[in-house]
Amino acid sequence: MSEWTDAIVGERMTVDNEFNDRVMASRFSSQEWGLIMTATEFEIENSEDPDAARIVADTSSLPAIMPELENVRSQVAAMGGGSDGGRSGGSGGGIVDSIKGALGLGGGGGGPSDEELEAAERLVQEYADELQAHLEEVGKWEQVRVAYQE
Image 1 (spheres, rainbow, N blue to C red):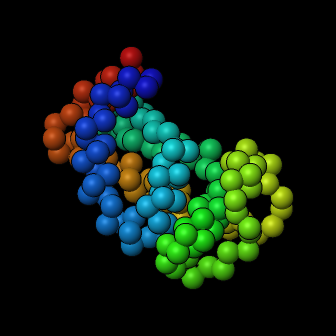
Image 2 (image 1 turned 120 degrees about the vertical axis):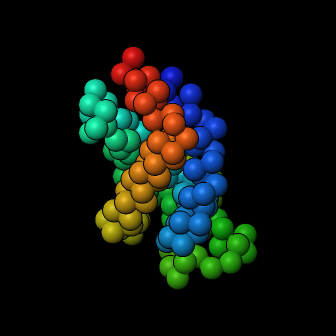
Image 3 (image 1 turned 60 degrees about the horizontal axis):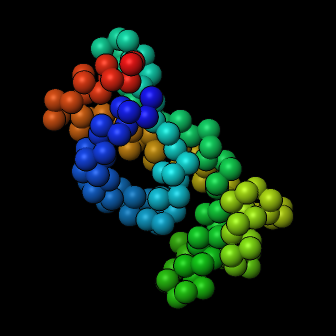
């Protein structure tokens, strides 16, 4: 199924550029957004029905990477990257903690909240909606929908 996404790399780059303003206005930095997107896959729901087909974001992997967002914030703050979005970084960070967090081996502690996970899921679905709208606008949606089925 990855062939359909490979076929729209250029379209995704266009949508990425257009969507950047929405990311900047969100609670996530561009680094955090990049991490969120690496944990997201896209599918086409109801692909057999041209009228009901739509791109949906599979965010089932997001909970596993959400603790890493705090590490990204800590690293940016430690490098003098400016504000951490009004949050106080409680974790020490560091490469070992980052790796442990990415593997889900980090200690307890207050990671990102359910509210933050929901915000990430909403933003990713908004991106999926924008991607579909763009594909429709440039006349590629039908081709992509059929390719998804194959």
